[in-house]
Image (tube, rainbow, N blue to C red; front, side):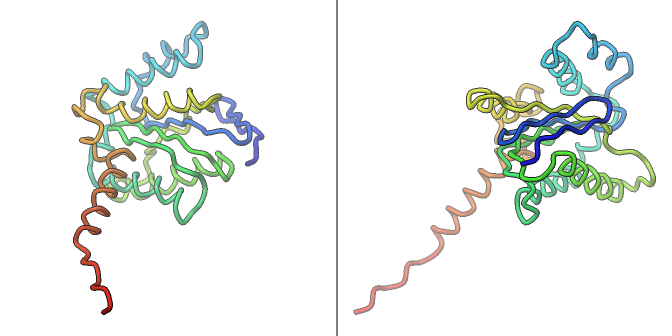
Length: 205
């Protein structure tokens, strides 16, 4: 996997062979006042992320277009397609929240290309679904972090899985339909049910 950085407002540097935790949000979902407090230079990158994510989780106003089940489902499908026939990454975990998205992947393509592809396609489709024309959908910047150990990767996965629960949206992670945890569980149950319904052929005499 290529490892050179790309830059928008922040540098994005990804070593080769590591999982990447990336978060992106809806355009205008974070008030300017909150943006300034979250970007206090005295805070570490991790502290800034936690503050920003808590603000998003608690938001009850501002753009919440991902609450629309049509939009949320489409974003889930596009993320899964990136790991499927597009083969841009191995998908470890993701969750689509009302105003932002978390994703943990092992990229096989440049992360700049991965993010551009996801955000462009989902923005175009979401605006079409919502009847919006020529308006920004995603914030251009994203937060990313590469996992430095197996233990850190496990913590990130747990963070993503439990995000809807900690935000007070559901009581259990499997009850939030717009995440890899519940979608994978539903597929597993579907396969098990299909297997149960298949009758075994009789043995030949």
